[in-house]
Length: 127
View 1 (cartoon, helix red, strand yellow):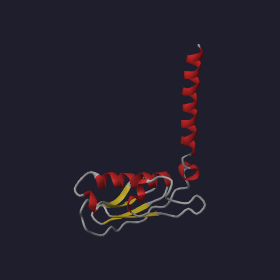
View 2: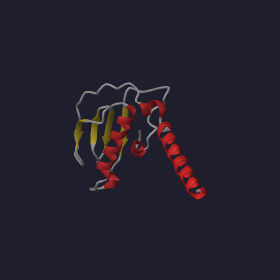
View 3: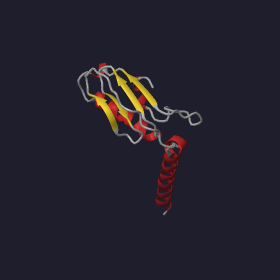
View 4: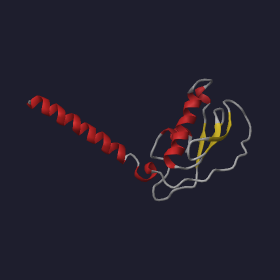
């Protein structure tokens, strides 16, 4: 993934051609010294958890890290620190529910809730 692509769920790995790990190369320089790099890292952690895949994140001025498939940070270089991370790559987990089904379960729940609201409002107006 290149830079901000790490913030979008569902576009990380193809369901039929699952990789063994994720690489995220990013330029967090435009965030400056703000909360942006920390938020960007947290969003990358979410992608690793969603897919059940380890991630290696290399940021030129942001936070570089090796993240396991459960979202735990195995190794990291802090904001604005230059260096080298020497860490083992954690093993991938079996495909998660999200990796297999994507947003379908959430869409079904939203549709069911919407249907329930519409039915209750219609029942109130007829009563």
